[in-house]
Amino acid sequence: MDATSRPPSPAGLRRTYEGHPLLEEDLAPDPISQFAAWFGEAVDAGLPEPNAMVVATCSAGGRPTARTVLLKGYDETGFVFYTNYESRKGRDLTENPRACLLFPWHAIRRQVRVEGPVVRVPREESAAYFRSRPYGSRIGAWASRQSAVVGSRRELDERYARLAERWPEDPPVPDFWGGFRVVPAEAEFWQGQLDRMHDRLRYRRAGDSWVVERLAP
Image 1 (tube, rainbow, N blue to C red):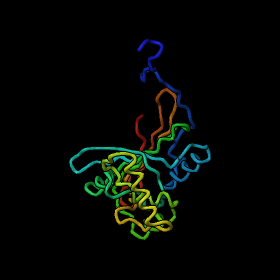
Image 2 (cartoon, rainbow, N blue to C red):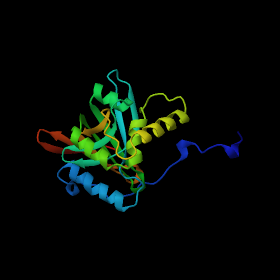
Image 3 (tube, rainbow, N blue to C red):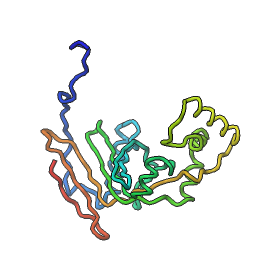
Image 4 (spheres, rainbow, N blue to C red):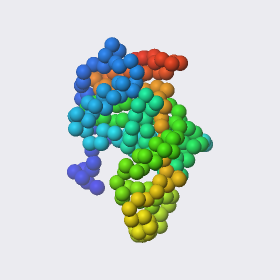
């Protein structure tokens, strides 16, 4: 590889972060309300898939892993996503029911990080969401043994076709599929600023209330 075809060095890639200061007095009283405000601004800014979030989990043996999934709901009880319970993240969360979520809204120089315990969504809530999904996604949930080794793309497509033939209209809700809710124990809101002097404000649960702390960048 000659010098002209080499990719740029990651160490040399720099951007200037500049945004409105994030001050304690401007925060909502709780992290869900603050997230709702920032999420609305991310949507209004036209970010592609602003509900995309990195979900980090850890097995009982301490092996971490992360992947991007889509947030499907949030309220005062927490943040909800859906998955195959037999997938790697599903197994991790069964063994070690805690997770960290990260919303990387780079285009508006913001990040939100949420940490806390995880519980399964009630079955009727998962079923209601499953039935709202497009038909192809419902068949796909049955066809994919998520995180398992697949022999070929053809094998996967043939399994999908067989299941579509079995359920041409209304596939049932798989018993191995459903939602997880991450219940926030802490949530950090990061706003990029000049010279690495970023604003980091963290909500930390203290009993029935929230403590707000500023973290050094």
